[in-house]
Amino acid sequence: MKKTNLLISILFCLFFAGMMFLFFIMPKQEFSQNEKRVLEEMPKFSLESLADGSWFSKMDTYFSDHFFARDFWVGLHSYIKQSVGLNATGDIYKGEDNWLLEKPITQNSTWTENIQILEKFAESHDNIYFMAVPTKGYIMEDKLPKLHDNYPDAQLLNQLKSLLSEEVSFIDVSGVLSENTDVYYKTDHHWTSKGAYIAYSKAGEQMGFTPTPQTEYDIENYDGFYGTSYSKSGLWATPPDTISLWKQQNLNVNVTITDENRPFPIEYDSMFFTDHLDEADKYPVFLDGNHALVNLKSNADSDKKLLIIRDSFAHCLAPFLASEYSEIDLIDLRYFKKQTASELIEQNNYDDILFVYGLDTLATDRSLQWLK
Image (cartoon, rainbow, N blue to C red; front, side):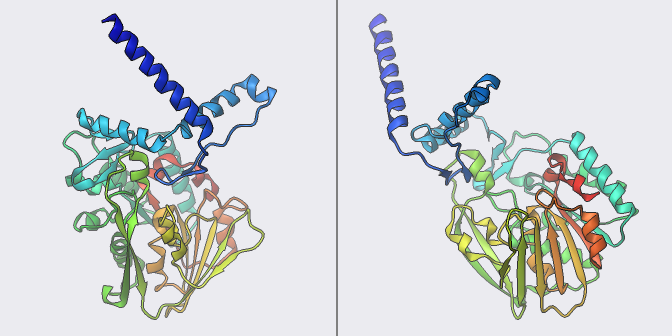
């Protein structure tokens, strides 16, 4: 027994020494393809960072991010958890048919504060519509594992309706999404282009337009899409999704993107930035991803102007709405900081204002304070 224990100890020490040796000699990656994030750089040493402990914290993250064969060990850990009966890896459930679903959101102080901000904003503005996007786990309930926490989406949506009903036209898309298939990606928390089209069609009932028929779109499909649910799961053997671009025939749109850290706006002649389809993160194919301000000018048979205050769920929804408005401004309050949304509205003659937010964003993001 003692010889066996000694052998195990020696093998462990050799393994640990080998891993440390490989850590120091192997080249370091700047970006994780699977996790879709920039990896920690070697922290700069200073007496101040040493004193406040930040250098040790960053070094810990640096070692973790650049551990030899990191993707293998992260994946092994996730699959071991699955093999022992744990149906969740971090914040992701492993569902049926290779569905990866985020755990339920929780109502907290941020949710309450955001609702109060929305109520106050609605009191001083007209023609406001609100589209709250339910979570994938709530809509795709039949794909969840047998053991899972309850999803509070219905309760939260009802609370939104009751608090905003007097001043805001609430667009409830939960019912129509539940009645259809292929409305969310298996490996990402966003809805698919089909899901966005269904939401656009539902919006037409309250916003006063007749949706463009599906037959007037050319649909291009691209394989190999891995989303945020995949990146968080560590379940690297999960098959990829197909990402679809719905391009309306005879609709021409000019796109101008403005960011506060760029000296000049970017101009583009399409709402679909197809260069991103060759990258690890393909979702920015829609409107080039997250930006402070995106302006769309189309040849739509309309003279109306729309402001969309949104998170990333609006990225593939806006191309459908471009056929109903001659001009659309989209602002992301996480990056739109030089002025408030109210100041922007005062400078422009918007016919309608549309909020598009995932319920998870409303429960976690504090940028709605920039509405004031």
